[in-house]
Image (cartoon, rainbow, N blue to C red; front, side, top):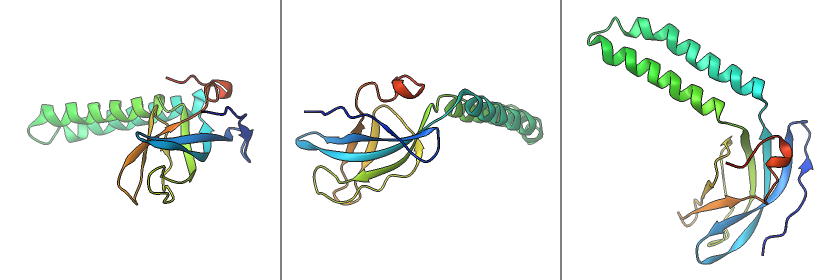
Length: 146
């Protein structure tokens, strides 16, 4: 059974806390305290533009090294990858406080782009669960769950 709770604002205006669950097949869900930062459009556009700008500046320089074409294509493709990752980062997962549903050890998650579903690796039992957030929590903070 999933209990939907309201997200509470944190210190920063674009950061909020909510309750989620760690899901692992065959085990009951474990409750988690999750801190998420909503990323505004200006932040995403600026980061994507910066990544492509750096790639466009570096591409002609690395194209001087033989064989020329692979280095040029690689630099532009890498810039495109980083730009796409920044553009799609609507939310950043800052902290997860809770335990693994299988072994009960504390989960240690590094901050990064919130993915759906977001993997939750456990250092204790080496199983990987996933984070489940209440329906509509992300939609209420300027984004959609996709």
